[in-house]
Length: 143
Picture 1 (cartoon, rainbow, N blue to C red):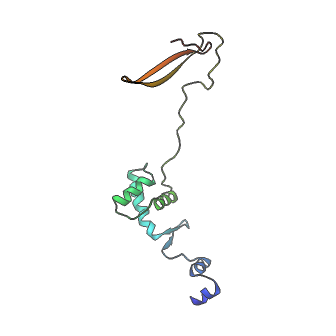
Picture 2: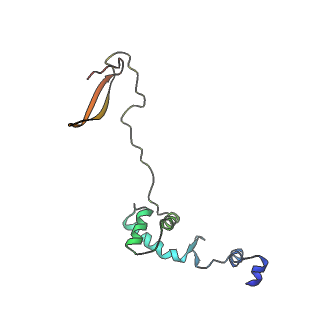
Picture 3: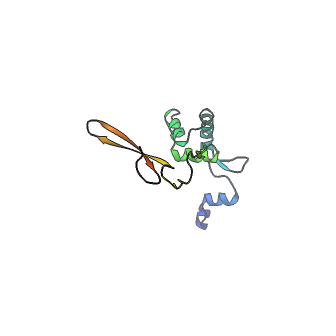
C-alpha cells in the first residue's frame, strides 16, 4: 500500500483501473453499480410504491423515517426512485378552453356582450360582488 501511495496512486484509483467493484458495491445484470446498503431500501420502496403508486419522494421519505424508523434523507430516496424508474408521472393535463382564442370585433351595437365581475368590501355588510354586462361595440354598461 505504501508503494502505491509513493507512486501517486490511491487504492480506489487502482481498483477502478483494474475494473474491480469498490467496497460495498455489487454489480447487477445491467452493469450498474448498486450499493448493497441501498438494496434493502430499494425493496422497501418498491413495496410501498405498489400500495401507493402516486407517492413522491417526500412522502416516501417521511414514511421510511417515521413508520419504518430508517435514517434516510430525501436526496437518497429521490436518487433511488429515479434510478429505479419509480417516479410518479409528471405529465400536465391540458384542459380544453371553453372560449374562443380571439375575442372578436363587434361591427354594430348589441352584437357582442361581455361580462366583468369584481368584489369589494363594504363596511358593516361584508364582501359585495358586482357583475357588469358591457356592450363590446359601444363600451357602455348594458346590465
